[in-house]
Amino acid sequence: MAIERRVILRETLLLVVAAAVQVGAPLLISTHRDDTGPVTAGGVVLLVLAVTAIPVRLVAPVPALLTAFGATLAYVSLGYAMGPIWVALVVTFGHVVWTGHRRVALAVLGAGYVGFLGLGPLLDRTEGVGWGGAVALAAWLGVLYTGCELLRTRRDRAEEAERARADAVRARVADERLAIARELHDVVAHSMSLISLQAGVALHVDESMSPPTREALSTIKAASKEALVELRSVLGVLRQADEGAPLAPTRGLAGLDDLVERARAAGVSVAVALDVDPAGLPRPVDLAAYRIVQEALTNVARHAEPPVAEVAIGVEGDGLVVEVRDEGSGRRRAEVLPSGGNGIPGMRERAASVDGTLEAGPRPGRGFAVVAHLPLGARA
Image (cartoon, rainbow, N blue to C red; front, side, top):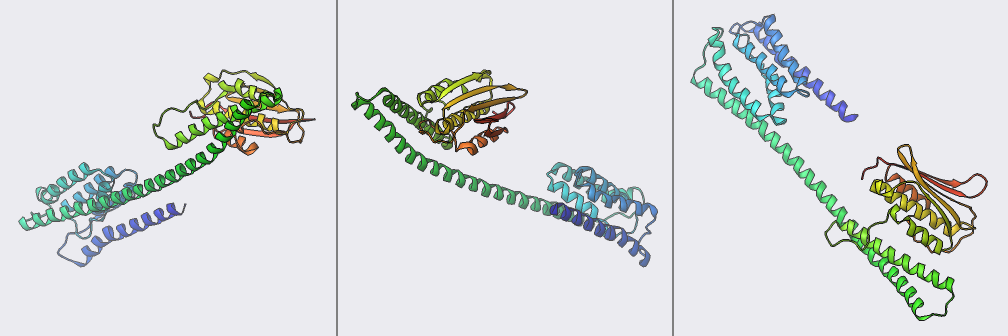
């Protein structure tokens, strides 16, 4: 808003000054000097017409220049009193060069050189100009065009330098993110590898363990191995380099059965109603829905008693609805399922990433519910 006010103030001041100089000066000169022609009503109209082209140049630079050029050429050729009548022509000409219309600018220069030298004598309204005047006019036009080009080139270089600085900042940020990702990968991957290895060793060396213990260790080993695969996949995306395909694709609803089996292995009773074909979903929506179900089932495994959950996924209107309900309770359970985020805030972030919404809270009577609405028009 402040920028708009500055532009309006600048343009108003320019218009007032141009009108005062271009219209007022010739009138003043014609009344105080006898060696100049008069400025009749027609001359005033031409001067005012040229000045009105100044604000027009902001929306139509070429028509504005042609208007100012035609009015100024007519004024000079008809022999009216001379003076600083070039303000509008210079301003509109400079704006045409500034906006990159070089061919138009050069054409006007050529037409102006011929017209200002020959049209007045041709109409028998002014005297011809000698060689000195012709050379001076050519030099003046050359200086005008060169000055405008220098200003435009300086502007372009400044913009290019600003873009280069912005690119450098983005590159530094990307490098820092990649360094953080690598550090995180090294730390977490080491811990996950150790968990998977120890679980595998325990399964191998102790064949006398009870079936529930063996099942829990198998779940821990499988979950930690999958987390390692996904961690490497995410790191590969951050690197944005062709370092080979990840060991497994990032999961979507096509992997819902595996997720439910892991939840059941962790002791959660899960009922699923999937009323949509995952293959027809936009990839971001598919992934967000999977992560929300993953996180919700993790919360059920951790907190619900009894650990019973119902998962319902279907299309309503132009969006995908994901609902996970449980029986509630506040007693903390074992954390044996991999988490898809940071609890409810993580699920909300997943929904928001595809312009969706998520509501989570107690159900009427008993239990807890997570309901996400994910628009199917989200960008892929």
